[in-house]
Length: 107
Image 1: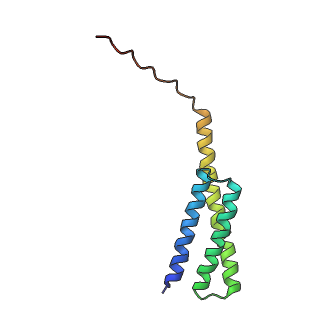
Image 2: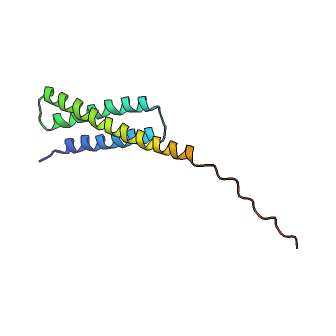
Image 3: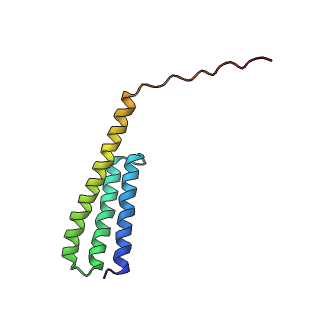
């Protein structure tokens, strides 16, 4: 059975992954900074999750680094793809001219 500490670390990992995605998509920070900070946090939470499951430190470190980097890489790749798609769409879509409103009729 999973202990509450493990569930907490897994939930924190999910929050960090979501924040990393949003930071890249909304351009809160540069992509590089978001990826580095998100990657470090994901590795830490995966290591803590693995330790809370009773794994030895060496195994928890290997698992945490491997999975933290993989998930961060996937998050950055997905956010980058959608950023690129949005930028291309904005570049190809002509700006709409302002809508003229009809003059108000005099009574």
